[in-house]
Amino acid sequence: MDFRGTTILSVRRGNSVVIGGDG
Image (cartoon, rainbow, N blue to C red; front, side):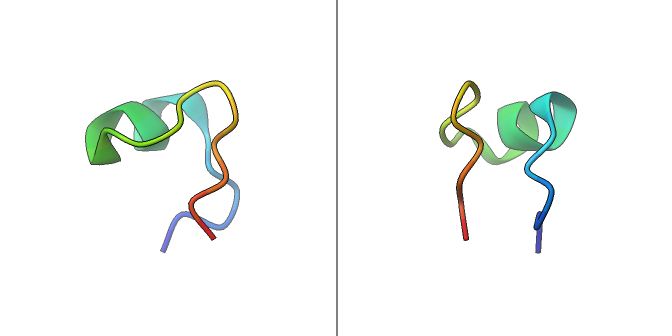
C-alpha cells in the first residue's frame, strides 16, 4: 500500500528502508 515508500512507512513494514521499493 506504500506506493511512495517513505522512510517511516518503510520502517513500519520492515522492508527496504533506503530503497523503499515494496511495490
